[in-house]
Structures are given as structure tokens and as C-alpha cells.
Length: 294
Image 1 (cartoon, rainbow, N blue to C red):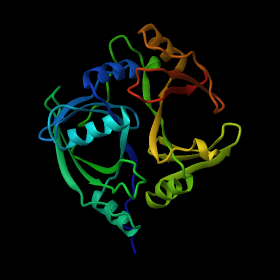
Image 2 (image 1 turned 45 degrees about the horizontal axis):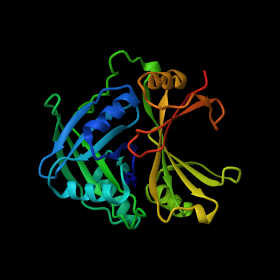
Image 3 (image 1 turned 180 degrees about the vertical axis):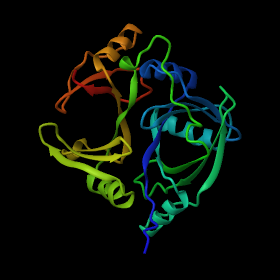
Image 4 (image 1 turned 180 degrees about the horizontal axis):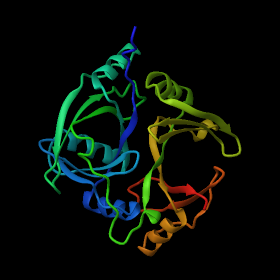
């Protein structure tokens, strides 16, 4: 019999909760070295967004912009937890089939709902189908599924900013960090329930952590559990980001020249890589650049 199961195919996008959307846009246009792909609003929901499409995912800056259910939830999150990674959307090519697969695995995924948005920059329209995942099933993490409808390039790649070259811009998201008190629970969620490939599971006593690396669509979800229970978080939460750059030293130098506080490039923990720490303002997200050692 044919296998009709559908699981996730990508980390479609990551959502960053911000208080001031215009200020966050300035921050991330500078960090990424790219102009936005899209600017939109959510009529009746009270939120607005700015999107940057990178090589393997896109970044959504989401901020309150009026009254509505989304604005209320976002403001509550900002008041309780501050700015930072709000959640992620996992991509699928068949929302209905993915929901059925998840439900068969015991996750009460909601029925898919169609939506659309209009780009205030160009007037272009995007259409999508999304489905929610209950927080009790995702250990409190905000994760939902999305299937894009219509043209594949309805969301264009984020163009390089004036005077920026590919060598000194961010090209992609390397990894997203999830902090957890229970790596085994995350292993079950991401690996068994979501069907995401676990590339590596190891403990590093010298760093005081256990790390799990899940790979999906060119993005890594890095799950980190402190080995010392006293240092473990009370619950799972999205924590940090690593941006991929073709030339880390050149990208760090560009940021420094623009007045952004950034460390010098140095060898990374992974052999053959360079890293640099991007210091605030990053809208509450511990952030690094990572790329090949040239």
C-alpha cells in the first residue's frame, strides 16, 4: 500500500517578537545586510510584520500595531518574557496529510485554516494554509505548521542592502537554539512525533551540556540541556540564533563599521569554522555569526 504520511519538510520561518517594529527592522536590516522582502499587517488581529527571506528559511519580525487577539497575545508575551524568539513555523507540502499523521501519533493538531496577506511594499498577495499545535504537546513552545499556496516566489529573497556584497551579508540561518530541562522529551517531540532527523546527540561535560542537533531543510534545531540540574531552565524555550555568513570576518567588520557592537572573528567549536558574537541590539536574542574558516 502507498505511504500517505506527510511530515514536515522545512523550518519555514522563525518569528521574533518585538515591541517597536520600525526599530527592529533597522536592527535586522543592519545585521543581515539585507532589505526586507515583505511588509504586512494583519487586519483585525492588531499585529504587523516585516519579513526577510534567506536561503533556507525566512525571518518574521512581529510587533503589536493596534487592537486584536494577536496583539493581546503578543503584548502579554512581551510583558512576561520580553523580546526574543516567539516561535517557529514548520513547513509541509500537504497540511491535511501532516495533520492526519500527527493525530495518528497522538498530537491533537488543529484543522488547517487558509489565510492570506498583502505586501504593503508592492501590493503582492501571498496565500497559505496553517494549523496549530497544542502547547501541552510541544512543551510550551509555540510551533505551528504551514503550507504555502500559490506561486513559490510570492515572497522574494531579501535583497542585499545598498553597498553590501554577498560576502559580508548573512546568507542563511545556521541554527536555532532551544533550551530544555529534558532532552529526552525534546528527542521524542522533534524526532519521533515530528519526524525530524536527529543528526547528533552528545554530552559535553567540559561545556556542562547535552546537545541534540536536529536537521530539517538546511536549518539545525540545537536542543541544549545543562548537565547541572540547578542550571536547567524550568521549561523549554527558544533562546539563541546563529546566522550563516560566507565571510564571517568581513561581515563582522561591516557591522562594526556600521556602529554595531560585535566581537572579532575567532575559530568556532566546530572544526573549520569561524564565529563572531553579535551583541545587542538583537531584540533579546543571543546571536552569533558562523561560517567557514577561509
